Image (tube, rainbow, N blue to C red):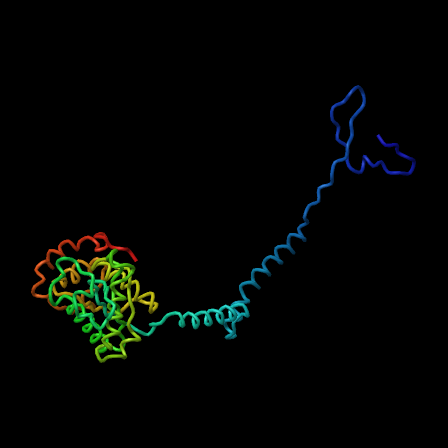
Length: 287
């Protein structure tokens, strides 16, 4: 123990005394820390400070609301969002268009001169397609699609079809139809050109519809209000029932415009029955 001098307070007595194990008649003494407790007055002030902070946090946005003002942070966020929306519009080429006109492709153009697009030798054809009038039927579909789009200034025209023939090289049906339309001068409707795009991944008629819906959304930022499909009449039931129902599209907002297959294309129905599988599975190159 420390010595205690005369007139000096015993330091051990200030901190209290705790007796532990004893050895003989000696006690072991050590310091006991003083516990600081919050007084009732301090508790009261802490509670008031917390309540005042909560009230201030709640009243600040309400005050801005009633005064018709925005906080600086909120105003900055809205300004940035408007700028982003305006910039995004420049990347959406068909934001104002509402309806979809879909021309389903049936072959890839392999010729050199698109002025000869009406010749079967200019297209990569399946065996059952190699009949007189087959190439002309493709041009008829292109013309019908352009005429439908010309009647509706809010329509977006899509030529749909992927790289469905490996031997034809990296050429798509959709782009083949677009270039054929360009070569034909858009059949006296040049105003449709700027509203015409391609979908270059579809491998069969179902994907023509499904992928074209996705492509329309990509080009416009929304889904179409109505759909008009241009294809062969023998595919009408398939488009109207199976495909339309599969994508859950309302019947009242779906139209079909078709042409008959060439009279000599006796194998067309056989080809269609085999069309349950994607065309790309028959030696196609996916695009």
